[in-house]
Length: 124
Image (tube, rainbow, N blue to C red; front, side, top):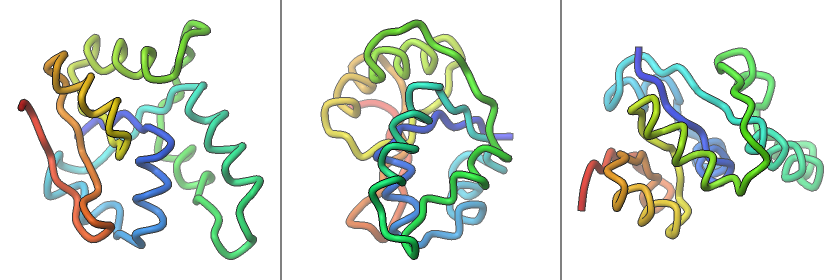
């Protein structure tokens, strides 16, 4: 099973891109299992509360398919990097700064490219 650490902006891009989540990620990491940090869940809940009813973020699906991880009260990106390094798993993100920091730390990323494709990047 392919563990994937979820960043809020990455999940939003995945849902908004109308990807078949299983098929798209299975090609890259195997059957996906999501690791969800409490800080990211808080961000996603805040984002979803401001979205129209027809543009929900499928948080029920995410929670059913995720292992929820508590983090120390730090910046979300710091918590994501720490967990990704500890577990040796990629981060799903579209955040340019988090991608740069991840690659600098040797952490792979899954990124949404032009809203149409997902690619795995592991190194500069």
